Structure formats: structure tokens, C-alpha cells
Image (tube, rainbow, N blue to C red; front, side, top):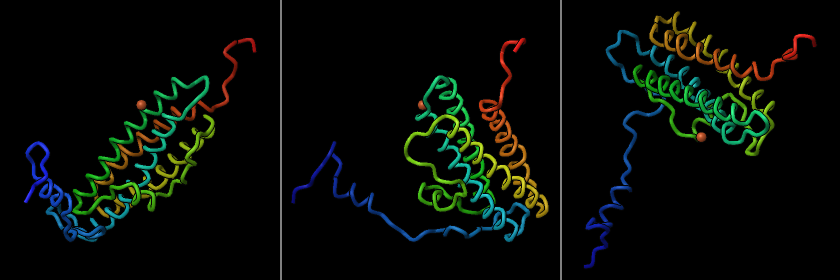
Length: 197
Ligand SMILES: [Fe+2]
């Protein structure tokens, strides 16, 4: 029998490795109790809310990347850089939320299809939009995240889940508010740069 090899590796074996499937060891929605001093019910509620926040934060991050690539016009360079900076910061938040979900014993959403099914942020068109529309879309997305984040932080505090409350307040809310400021100033009515006008 002949064996196909690439660099000495048996391809039949290599293919069988990629074909391995097994039952899930922890289904989505199930919470595994960890010794963190919080009840399973508290952790389950936190995980559920954080997965919503995760889906919206991933979408906001991707919206920034889309606009980073597609922006055009006289402010191209500054917005190209700003959108990328915000996208990077949102990426850090995505990781913090996902890892908080895992730390509570849950399973975090991860893949694009699942994110798309879950997010509350309206889906943008594939094509390019003008700068004002890009910024308006981002501001709307930030507002969705901020509103849900404040509610979730309050609920986490009421449940006694201080770690989740702290992450949402210190990381998510503060970062999103700052990004809104940087964005909103681009579309604010500004007086003339000349004092006599
Ligand atoms: Fe880039």
C-alpha cells in the first residue's frame, strides 16, 4: 500500500486528526460551579448578561475596523488612525468580558455567526458610508453598549457579584464613554476658528 506523505508525514493520519469530533464537554448556557463564593444562580445570570455585552462589544469592535478600512474624505488619516485605536481598545474589552464569563464558570460566545445572531447593534451595509453616517452608527452602537452595561453593572452589584460590577464600570463604561467623547467632537457644531466671526 502506498502512503501519501508531505515532509514525511502520513497524510491519511493528518486528515484524520482534522476530522476529530466529540460531544461538547460543556454546552453553551451551562455553568460549572467554581469555588469563588458565588451561587450557581448568580453566576448563570452574570454569564447570560455578559454574553449579550460580549456580542455587542465584538460587533462594535468590528464596526470600528470596517470604518477604519472604508473611511474616506479630508479627515481620512485622522479617522483611519482613531478608528483603529478604538478597535484595538474594544478588542481588549472583548477579551476581558469573555474571560470574565469563563471565570464565572460559563461558556463565552466566540464565533461570528453566533455574535451576529445575538447582538442588538443594527447590521451595517457591506458597502461604504459617508463619514457622518459612520460616526452616527458608531455613536448609536456605543449608546446601546453603555445603556445595557449600566443596567448590568447595577444588577451585578445587587447580586453581590462585585467582580463583574467592577469590570463593567471600570473598564467597559469608562472606555466607551471616552470613545464617545472622541467621536462626538468630530460631528459637534464648532464655532469658526477666527475670533471675529
Ligand atoms: Fe489597519
